Length: 623
Image (cartoon, rainbow, N blue to C red; front, side, top):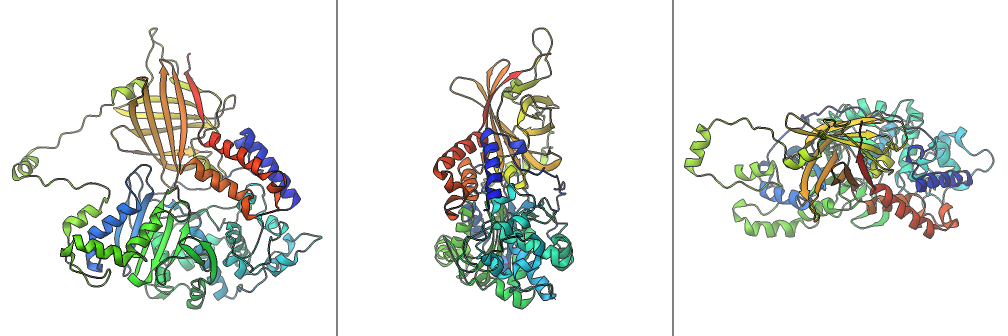
């Protein structure tokens, strides 16, 4: 990181420590994400697990191992392909496989595919020098010999040694220029160091040589042949796709990309990826030192099973390709285990290196399955197990007797009457003795808590204003919560109103924040605390992201509340990610070590907790 960048980073950190989140980055947020329309057609041939040699009961047990059923869900959606057919596609409530989901670093592998397509067209090669694509972005006085030695292959294998990392994207407008001005910490090719800006620079190179955006280039060559789209990919302030993150895909689209690799680059008889390039991608020649992900190829990781590999995005966005079983397992999730977590461990245990022992143990309890190896011969259909697979986390209902079955057929279904719990009505606006209810808003004291979780804001640069007021109201037996956005003393940035389910289920809606729509689902649960006060736990799930915002709201008086905000994945994971990006142990001798990194880290950790876990008192406004 050069001196100018260090000064910019210091300015960002000071704003962060002061809680000036709205002006944290030197460039404004630009809304771009569309309001995605649900799409229930995966455009894949379908089959049942038994026809492809997998017992449905075994597959159900796998899903339950990948997600233990607690809240918030670790696994949002999953798609399983076997022999090229979709045998299972499941989602944890309230998530759905019909909506695109943030895929984080999963997009890196898609960038590598794009590089291969451009190489096949003669637009570049893996041996090209990176500086040759952007001569106008080089420092005018000092030309680094390390930067001059960097090739496209070094970017692909994460061995560039580049200093400019994800934190730099928060302080610079021109990421390409900043990449070259930041130099390298080691000679390219010496060692593996994971850095999303390598993938971004590949995206920038592709935009330069193709004279198109990355999505425009890939749509006719990759996305349309596979039936994927329309595709949204977040861009940098200069309009270039972020490459290393920012790609939204449905879980079945993620599975298709894995299947394309399993097919050797061929889709429905048409060659999509060059065979030679795919072989290079899958060489996995770089040693990473990461648990369960020890080898790295061209923007994709190895996996602990024979000949297997994975597309990997943080928090559970995966496509694991398992050639031994002719299988692809794709997932979206919100697991706090970052890169290698419960979901990947379950895939490895049930269909990876642990599969022989796990399946042998399962067969002992299910001798009727009649098969000794997975994904080989078709099995007898098991309708009951297949029905349970539709929602692996529900418990089977007891079989009703003949009289109950007859009664249920004769009884006409009654229209359920909507009725809110009494506790919900106590939160709703009510008239006082004089007949005035004010405006029903509870005004919050000063705090930094946004409707969007902190980690989501940091990834998208959408640092929304704090929630300045809350209002609860009932309409036709339904419970609604309104959030006024804008800090104390600041002009309002708008109001978001969401319905919240009160019967244990979620109600879906849309939260528009800074002009960008987020599909959301909210649930309200009520209880009494140890002081016999009403407590509302309001969970807001962002359905296209790994993040959940929770409001814990306590009625402390007739006109007063105490509000505390939480987010999932939790504050420690957010802090870990933040500190790894502003220097940490990976970049010795740079910026923050020189100004006392230990002290700064402690302050940052404390500040992250304050921002991610804010609290505030609230008073009801009066006319």
